[in-house]
View 1 (cartoon, rainbow, N blue to C red):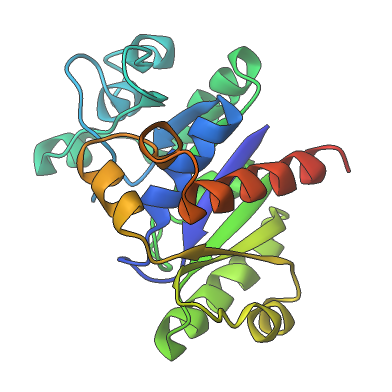
View 2 (view 1 turned 120 degrees about the vertical axis):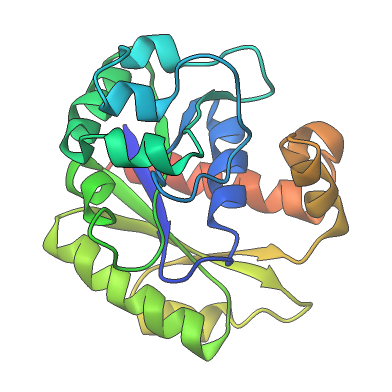
Length: 221
């Protein structure tokens, strides 16, 4: 199953959600933001190389870290060399080899945002509760609808003790999982680890476990 993790604004924690969700699902996470990669870097072929025709996607899979992943290059030259339309084929090949393919998708409504959504089986939409973040996420929600990438869950990220899950669910017309603002999660992310490995009993780890359970339920529909 190909799952696009997307959001309307940068900086809402989309990459953190994708990385931790892939860890919970024991899947492969793909850094699909071709211009602003944010997941841990690695040596060897990356997604830029795959989309430029220099490597097969199987060569870019890294299984030696805490989470199986396909990293993306971080150079402007690398981004300019890619053929973005090759992304769909790369994701479909990964889908044949892995039960779960979690794509950390570009934020906003740039031209490349629709590429992972066009091939995704379902979408997880990440937002914070700020007015601007919710408004931009609603626009991406409409794009996902147009591309038939069903909305599985909304993640309300960096919440306080009383998250506004009901009002956000009403706005998006979808169930919401809240992820609390967390020093444990921030520390894990700085060291390139999913939070369930470093703080397995933390509220953040419990939130990602709940999100993974929700994604499982979406895959069985």
